[in-house]
Amino acid sequence: MTDGRTGAAAVRSYNQNCPIALGMDVLGDRWTLLILREMVGGPRRYVDIRAELPGIATNLLAERLRELEAAGLVERTELPPPAARAVLGLTEAGWRYVVPVLQSVARFGLRQWDTAEPDAVSPFSGFLAGILLAFDPAAAADLKESVAADVDGRRFEFAVSGQRLGPADGPPTVTMTSRAADLVAARLAATPADRERALRAVTFTGPAGSVDHVRRAFHLTPDGSFETAS
Image 1 (cartoon, rainbow, N blue to C red):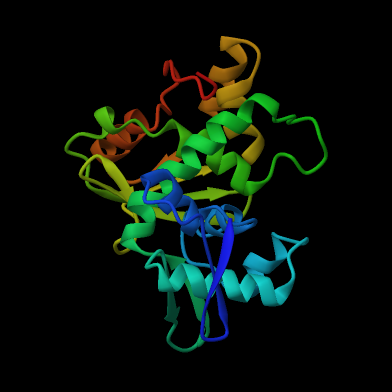
Image 2 (cartoon, rainbow, N blue to C red):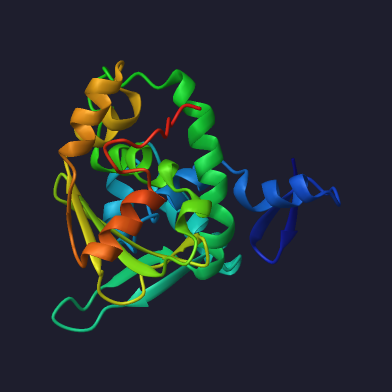
């Protein structure tokens, strides 16, 4: 990668008119995908993003966020009182183009993921393995719902519409609640019986028809055949 300059800011580019190179110009820098990862499931405060990325320098995080805002993938929102704070979240374009990239990278990384390591199973990894990677666009046909997932005390919010995931649009109509460990086991446990037992521990609230459709769209029915690692 080469460096050019516009004013005082370095512009990194592979200088190749190729879709992969052009995509890497935006997403290929170190930390960028991990920063975007932190905003999947709803906007977050800067300090919360920083806390999940202990190896990144504060000035580098701020720089990456500015670049992602300039690229139209991240937006900053000021919450009204009493919160009165700024949060950072994925834009519609971020959900449309970045989330599928994160899903593909995560599926690739699952081959090396050791869930027995300390802190490997977290609210986000439970959401990722148990919900985000399980989304089935074909099973989500005609589904238009705002959904929340409460995983070990952390809330993830998103919408399903047009057979794809997007930012939350109003209060959730369906809420699922689970331990991260159960969501991971539902996908990666060694036996079908263990996977089914974990799936049965996931609870849902909302209108019965909406709950049923959401369960099917994310293969969260006890007889679901989805395998994260497939």
